[in-house]
Amino acid sequence: MLIVADSNILLRLAEPKHRMHPETRDSTAVLLRGGHELCIFPQSIYEFWVVATRPQDKNGLGMEPSEAAVELNRFLVTFDLLADTSAVFPEWVSLVGTHKVKGKPAHDARIVAAMNVHAVSHLLTFNDADFLRYPTITVLTPAGVLAGSHP
Image 1: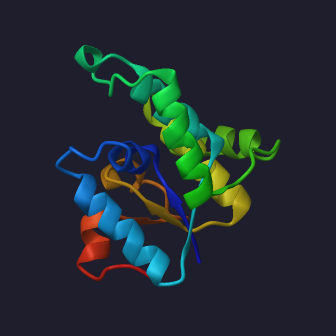
Image 2 (image 1 turned 135 degrees about the vertical axis):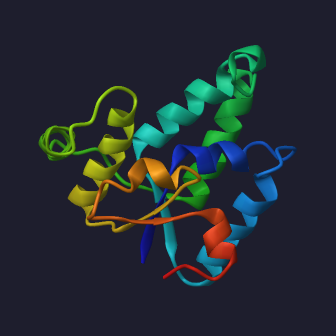
Image 3 (image 1 turned 60 degrees about the horizontal axis):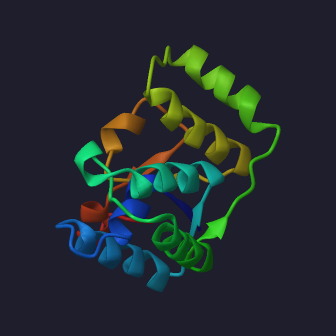
């Protein structure tokens, strides 16, 4: 089964000293050992890059572009990259309209739109509450995966 990794999963994997890194590393390993394929969308790479290269005093990781590029390449080896397609936009328009999405959560709606277009039903994220409005997907958290709650 394909499982999408949200950008916050990528960020925690790239930050070994973060308190959530072990949980993230271990939950992705459990899913991979279970025969699941982890995938990402270009949007998650963009979001990772923005936060990874933003200064630490601005809530970023403070990486140099060369450091972020190393992590990006590691992600492209670990995760399947699913392409953006022209079908994602109309699906996103439908989702933000149907669910009356306002502001920053529109980014999350785009992930769900891409999931719907690619027929991927499961998402691994720390922000499970952000995705509960979307009945077409199943949200997994790293803690839940480690507790045995996964497909």
